[in-house]
Image (cartoon, rainbow, N blue to C red; front, side):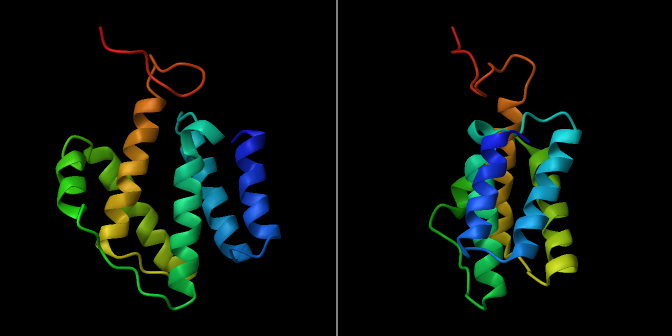
Length: 136
């Protein structure tokens, strides 16, 4: 994990926006993704980081998280990324086991979208900034 992404997590923690255990959980998940060879930087994983920290915090605070009108579209997109869906499911299981935060299916799917994007940005032909070269 790069310095800027670690700073994002620390700012959420220090500002009291997330519980320390949530920040620790998300940092551990990002470290695991990096260990798998993913490019885990502010550019590639910033949105994933913020979304997961805030979703887990809302759940632990007792807030309901409901689906969106885009759930069907997200499911269609994820059909091309079964590895991201599977990884999102594993993260959700760990979040429930370790934090007591049961992510609803719509949140797991949204997490899957973030992981699919991370996978694309971590591909061997991705640029240093996490983007992919244009398709000719």
